[in-house]
Image 1 (spheres, one colour):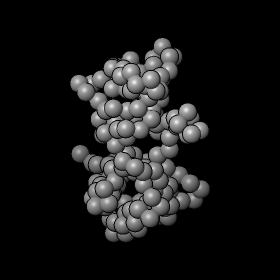
Image 2 (tube, helix red, strand yellow):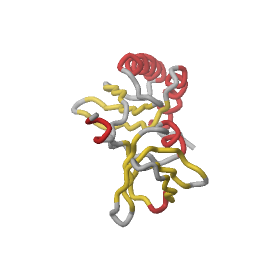
Image 3 (tube, rainbow, N blue to C red):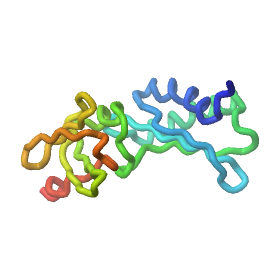
Image 4 (cartoon, rainbow, N blue to C red):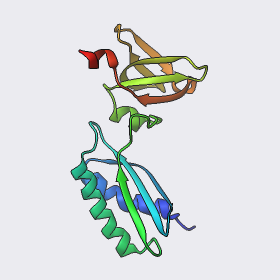
Length: 154
């Protein structure tokens, strides 16, 4: 069975990113004018600085050239996720444990608080009043990082 180009790029990117303590979240290959566009999203606890992004870009670019996976010209973009990137799995919640997050429930309700991690499929969220909520991920529509504006004003 053939491995997709995206899956092969993930295989090439993971060791490079892993040496720098970074997780590969997503790889996509599309079009950008006359060249192919290879986008790689990476993250780690505390965020990813520009130097780390550049190091991953240099290493992966060399690997892509050696493997010759992309026919013709391509442009490689390495980026970190923004605040709106959804947290969906155990690794996401681990990476952002202790950070302020926003939960949108399937019924439209919203709740913000400190990510205390996952336990048995339940998100533990401490609100600004110090109350801990146990939230089933199945009851959520989206969970993402957010800015605690009350704290930011201080």
